[in-house]
Length: 307
Image 1 (cartoon, rainbow, N blue to C red):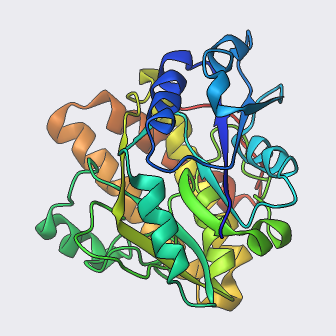
Image 2: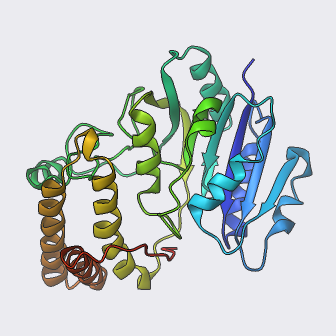
C-alpha cells in the first residue's frame, strides 16, 4: 500500500496556509506525513498547532528560499513513505484529491516519475495569442511542452490525463526514489522562478510525467506585488538562460532563447505603450536589464519574492 507525504513550504501567509490545512483535514484519504517548512518572519507555528490531528512535522528554515525549503523538507521524510509531493501554501484541495491521486498511482506504469494535481481555476489561454506567440518560440498549442527556447506551454485545467514535459512544482507527487535522487537547484533563489521547470524537466530525462485530471485543486494565489514586476522581468531572462544552457544536451537552444527573450521584451514594451500599463513597462525594463547582463556575460543569481 502506498504511503504519501507532502512538503509544504510557507512564508508569511498564515491565512492561506490555514485554508490548505483545512482542505487536507477534509480529505477522504489523508496523507501519511505532512511537513510544513516555515520561512516566515515571525514564524507561523501557531497555525500548525491548530491542526494537531494532522500530526504535522514543523521545520523552520530562515532566511527563506523556496528551493531550499523544499529540499530541507524532503530530508525529514519517514522511512516508510513511498510517494512524496510538494504543495504550495495557497492551494485548496478538493475533498477526494489525494484519494484520486493514490488511485492513479496504484495503476501507474513503472517509468512514471511524477504526477501533478489538476489546477481547475487556471485560466485557459487565448488560442489566437498562443498561435501568434509560437512564431517567436514563446508558446505552443499543445499543453505542457518545453520549447527549444526554454519557454513552456501552460498546464491549465485539463479534461483528461496528459503526459507533459514539465510539472508545476507546488502541486506534485513523486516516487520516493525520485526525491532521493533529485533535488531542487538552489541557484534559483527566493521565490525560485522556473525552479519547478528545472526540477521536473530534469526528471523527465529518465522518467515520464503525468497530470491527473480527476485529482483537482484550486489555486488561491494572491496577486503579484506591484513592485515585483521589474524583478520578474529580469528573472524571465536570466533564470531562463541559465536553464537553457543547463539542458542544451536535451534540445534546448541558446539562439532560440535569445530570439524569444527579445520578442518578450518587444511585446512587453508594446503592451506598456498601447495600454499605458505600468506592470508591463516594469517587466520590459527587467527584460532589458536581463538581456544586457547576458550580453556582458554577467550571469548571476537574483533573489527576491514576487508576492
